[in-house]
Length: 215
Ligand SMILES: O=C(O)CCC(=O)C(=O)O
Ligand SMILES: [Fe+2]
Image (cartoon, rainbow, N blue to C red):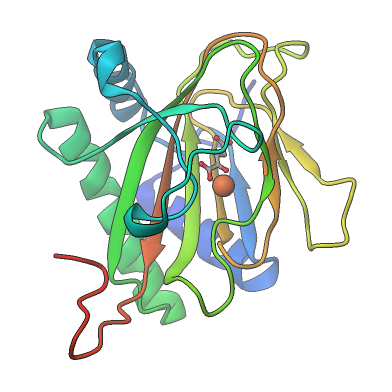
């Protein structure tokens, strides 16, 4: 696919614009190619045993629910060059959006995800109003040559009543960003191995007796 060549500035500007107008943004060829290759190699080097069955909710109310999601995840901590470059990239996006849109994004958490053939993630919201401090979700894809028929599309619904949605192929370099509380979405069953990174920007909702997010 031929698409626009982005610089961080033109990309971040376009994402900020889309978030203001629509609350979500889909951008092809968004990640710099060298960052994609670094992340792809990193992903392939992670031993299978480091991937954990993904759960729903945060540490304290973590439940594994095979009915809802069957992918496997590995948190990105920044202890590798690729991980660090990714976190730097996300931090630049965070700073840009805070300046432009006053979102007050305070921290970022993200993980690699692997969906083996047959795996999926049913329709869900990444955050429930008032219950979490996840504000903005981003997903980037690491799969080259994804074609129609491979399945594994992300379907983004415009609101809770939307049943049609917009399908996004998990093609390498594509980025999707959306307000975590507003957009239900799902991952359709994939027919081939599907690699991605999902991340969440959070606001600080610490009170005196609770530090949240944890340091
Ligand atoms: O991989 C995707 O396309 C979306 C993943 C997702 O919705 C999530 O991890 O919350
Ligand atoms: Fe999600």
